[in-house]
Image 1: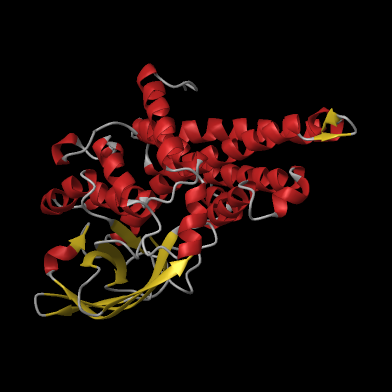
Image 2: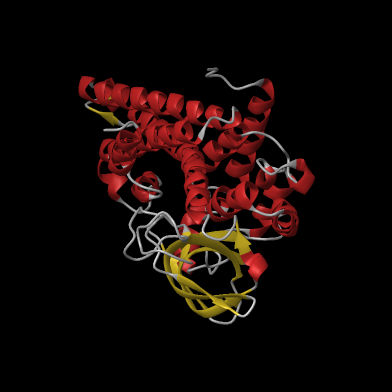
Length: 382
């Protein structure tokens, strides 16, 4: 496995870093939070990302995408993580678009993918439910046949970017009971369809989300994605890929937090010397460096497996390993960053606290470290 970027990926990395540092500085987080901005991101920056081809990196060229690879997406996600960019990449690109690429019909792909790649459509995946925790099989929302289509009733929680999505990709039961792998179907639903209720949620990390209710929402038969009753494997494959991409964003966040902490250790003085010269702080910084590099290796391995079209079991194991490693390392980076900054690290005026908030939220997104380690053990037969 190659642990270095290609020349093209290095160019992409420089371009992404220059854009996010100039157009998406971390001070935006305070502005969006304090003003209760209804979107929570810049639509102008989103359009610029589309122009650069970022929104269609893993979308085939036949549908207006860039047709690149997952390691190219990894490069962009890492840079987005370095300034905690709040644009709706997770809901639109990592989740819903991935699901359409994996399971959409030709008509569905033609209808949605070009618009997403052009920055003209926002999507969200509504799969989590109030009593479901990390289990995508825990689906209580029901879909019943109504005429030639379907009628959806239920509620979804923590729908990432659901407050701005034009379309929601919704998991619902067409058979079976909550927790069953069979009987889950996925439906494409307009957010403004009659019966859809969206409540904006404000997350601690500044990202946008929504609670969504479906009160007898009717959709046509061609709204089913991946076939009736075929939603579970589609959700599993989609979430594994989104988890891998999220780990790249987490890698960028922990790296930036570590760099910020190192700069402080080199400049803050006590007893006439930089505090970074103290042996105890050197040891803590060294441990953090090692943890981040281990995380980087796992993230790169997971993305390379996707580019190699690895089988689903291998992808699931690597997704779990990367997420578990990144969850532990990012939380450690956030905790150490705040502690080694001392009193100023506890204030809202200093940026290091935003990394800790993002680490805590990302840690439980798509399952925490314990969930993924248990899933890997189950895959391996333990």
